[in-house]
Image (cartoon, rainbow, N blue to C red; front, side, top):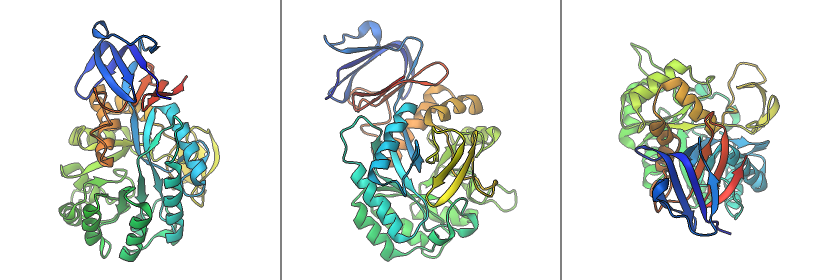
Length: 389
């Protein structure tokens, strides 16, 4: 049942400013008021949430996440995907894209089918906005923690089956632009309003430009599993930094990207050019130990997730609230711009920016209330209290 909620006394972070000692009113799943507390008039019977000394962020949107809380998108089925979404509200994530890895065609179809089933829930959980297919059309030389048997060149018959099975729910596909047929596939994805994201690639700068010309607009986990920034042989990472036509994902766990490189990227790209993601695995929120990433076994030690070889990074245990915390520490950007990278840019990527991604009257009441240390005090999804510490 929809609640009437008044979040009072916190510092509200809107798309363009910080509002201290502010109030946000939520009713019928929407935000109905944002402004100084002295101007607010909560309806009788509203649930009053005291946010004094806290930050009131737009709900975070994680567009690249393979699992959470012990569940994996590829193997846990619909019930497991729903449990993962329920776990993520603990970290301020109000919406997400379950993300596949490169796999056999029938395994990807299974993940699509189960994700679509998982969308049918009324529980106060992180909302599934669609899917991110990471692969399978990627470069095996830059596979990272992707299985060899799942990697192949673009196949348009397969793509047609994936599109039919997803029925409009594929929002992002990661592919390597240098593979035969990739540029045509990018054009096909654009025609279906699917974001073509460049990644797991050894392409040179000119090939990356050709991909942008074909319709690619994003890049998958900047610097990781891609050709780099070389002064005589600039690759995909250099193109991402240099070209305004690309918005790049960034994993700010301090493992995937050195803080100084994160600072370089955000200074170069600004808030319109970076989307914060976690690339989280089933181990998110579970502590050290052995976990699954698809069919791979992954070892977690602190912030480091690797395959059993001990060196190949395999996703992360990062959470969105910690990504925001690390953005403050690593980049020096202000909270307004960091919130934009954690909510509005991902909302744009998913095609939902008209009703999600910022704290604004008329938008969905998706809100993350964070303490001064960026731990999560409360999460509201579609106007319903989904988590309280």
